[in-house]
Image (cartoon, rainbow, N blue to C red; front, side, top):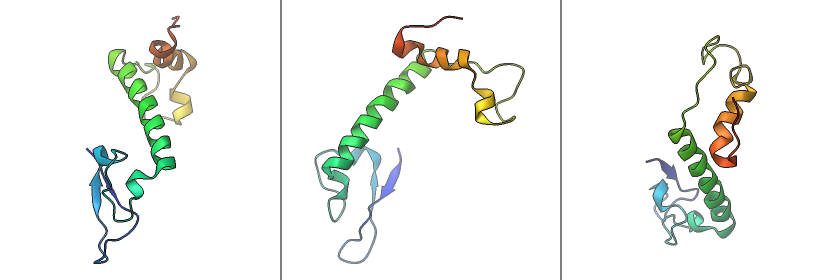
Length: 98
């Protein structure tokens, strides 16, 4: 569970922190209601839904890194190869070839 600071202070000038599960839950938790802003919640819920699907796919079919390079060597782009990208997205697309 993560906690996020509200962008506006309460009447006492204190900044409240809220748990991630109360973001966009239909109840105002931040002093000025920023945690329930319609536009931000639409983006948050859409992004969270996509990330949940991707996380589930990774958990069900964990990717393997190429043995020739460690995770910390080089740049991220050098580590993630096209076959690995296809393997990550296979559960979402239904297409995976070795």
